[in-house]
Amino acid sequence: MKNIFSLSDKIIKLAKKAEEDIKDKFEAIDENSFYNHMKVQKAFSDNKISTEYFIATSGYGYDDQGRDSLDNVYAGAFGCEAALVRPNIVSGTHALTVMLFAVLRPGDKLLSVTGTPYDTLKGVISGTGNGSLADFGISFEKVDLKNGRPDYEGIKKALSDKRIKAVFIQRSKGYEFRPSIDIATTKELCGFIKSVKPDVYTLVDNCYGEFVEKKEPVSAGADLMAGSLIKNPGGGLAPTGGYIAGKKKLTALAADRLTAPGIGLECGCNFGLIKQLYQGFYMAPHIVAQSLKTSLFCAAVAKRLSYEICPDTEEVRTDIIQAIRFRTREKVIAFCRGLQKGSPVDSHVEPIPWAMPGYSDEVIMAAGAFNQGASIEISADAPMREPYACYMQGGLTYESGKLAVMLAFDSVLSLDE
Ligand SMILES: *Cc1c(COP(=O)(O)O)cnc(C)c1O
Image 1 (cartoon, protein in one colour):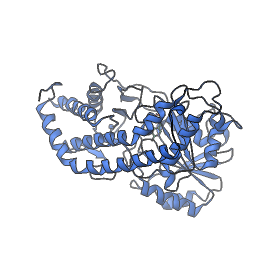
Image 2: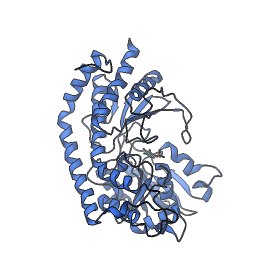
Image 3: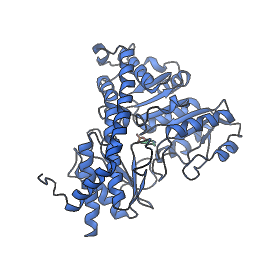
Image 4: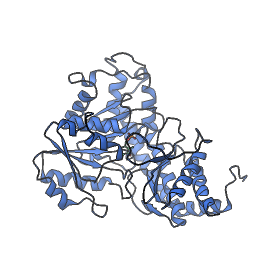
């Protein structure tokens, strides 16, 4: 085979061995993907999706059947009562913000049971003067994980505060080097929370988690969840958007918050993007499988190079993220630069760390995606802080993911020369 990318002998050999290490795990990923595809196909069939649903709407978007049916398709596939799927939800952070403001009212308190929420939620929870939860008199408390597991004793204690209206669970690890919260744990956690305080709402940040397992948090006991369409459920085809899904009553509140009280689900045109949203969701189980294989491959290569990884190749996966602890700033930068070389867009560009809006430390991002910042596409990012862990995710095809990961590690290996 011709070495088109001048990959080193070392990485070629390493990749071969790494692939042998994980071959048997690909079967389980395919099986999971087939199951999730059946859920999606069932939702398409049940909702009798037809060509007229793909018509572009403008203005108010009254009676946009495509939009309303897409909500139902998401709800059906996710196993919940209702969903709100919109191209005018600008990001995951926006979807999560809508979810939080939908449920919380002045005087209420939000309790995070998975430690500090994702970096971009900091300003949402405690920003000053710009309309954060804190500005509306909504307080916040967190219970950290204990050895990567929910601290049930700590949670029980914290729940004694009568002001707590909602509990926040972040499924994916974000920029923490910890195991993600899998569906079995979510089920146990939601059951526990309701047993201590039955009237509390359980809200899940489901970013990066969709279709990784056979169930979603809302069919495992959570009341509401939110995520981004340029991650898993957009299947790489949705150019933008977000969703909120769960209990019907709460989804309606989220719609009222996204548009206006009283308008809720009635308004919101589809900008002509509706077919991409449908097709992306249809592709999503398969695309998620591709990115899971890419993550597993990345983990196997890193393991052979003796880097600390999270999750390990042998652990259960509940999101598409692979964390690698490089320990030095130089290696993180080298990894991201190598990965960028294997990206479809801007492969000639060198990523550099910068002060991104919403993040407290400088962040480096390898993101050569068709849709700007889409992390269901091959991407890696890292906050520039100890212990210099890099978070890799995505890959629309295993082939592209594998090549990008090989280029990334080759770039790291070249530092030792
Ligand atoms: C990506 C992500 C977010 C925020 O999503 P954006 O689209 O970047 O705003 C929130 N939480 C987690 C766990 C994420 O992975």
